[in-house]
Image (cartoon, rainbow, N blue to C red; front, side, top):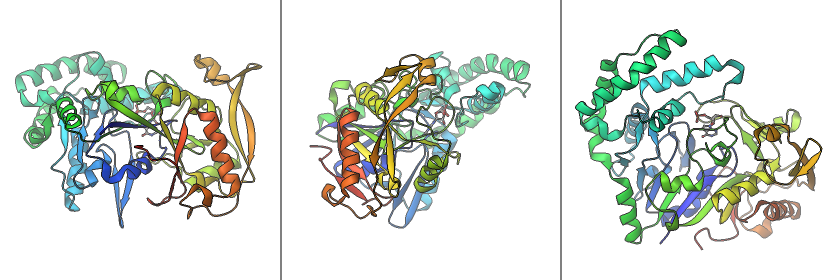
Length: 428
Ligand code: IMP
């Protein structure tokens, strides 16, 4: 039984839940390996709607063991808030395992995220303001606080004091804010220690032993390829590795154990926050995509920027992640369009460029070169086989497959869990 990775192929919000649902009962462990509560997914089970920002969706499936591994940054207040909300609705959350090596987002990380963005003014990244970047910065700078530090005050206190010494100078002298007291931060963190203790584990060991025992482990990437700190549109990215490689470093499971890499890709493109986005639309077509696709952020409520499908981006994702299967989502959103443009290459200062340019300034200048495909007007939300899709919808999917570097194994045709057309078994 394999380790499977699911990641987003574009700038996030591709609807990864659809792909997770498809694997359904065949999964034993679901691992969140990167990011923090900057993610947001709404899961609908029966007539109940759950909004999760930090917890992996596996928490809602009976029998599945949800794991938050070392690559994640955890806001403990948010963690307990989500756990309490689920418990109140009768969900058993006792199976959750949390890595002792995961880093913690503290009060000062959240404050710094917000004040730095404000300070950047027009040049801001458009972060979710959840303290993600500052927490990862501390991790790399080796002044981060880890989950295991909560169990030894003699380690925790000097670490917090050390981190705050420098940060308070920044807050007070540069950003004109109040200093944050170490006592306050330490007391807050310690208040969670005993409740956290039963969940904490060596999750790398847990996951490798599970794979040895023939269990199926699903690694669910937060954010997406183009927001990856190494491979995305830096600096307009998140601060973690959202690509498939991040599943290995972020969990302690080696790359050669990952047998399938499933990339979720929308039938068009969206992005929140700042940064290059060649196919972005500022006209009524963009409005059409936003209103038909309900493109507002789950975590921040911000309207998402919308544009046409970008084949070089999909190809780039296929390459960087070693994609074995694409799950194409939200095809139904395009219903009713007369013609559907797809970006097949870019014009960069008069030169036709087939792949995502490595230079940031070239990508900023890239003007999409479109090929247009005929649209369809039939309602496709009831289709369950590829043959049930209108000819033009099939043609659109086959054209994207040809340009995107991996097979399209499933197609989302509506908001319902069941609204999906499967062409190839994702585990086959
Ligand atoms: P941060 O992750 O809060 O630091 O934000 C960095 C960039 O990533 C911003 O452009 C955010 O809008 C974007 N981002 C973070 N999380 C998500 C997500 O789950 N979906 C889409 N964009 C995201």
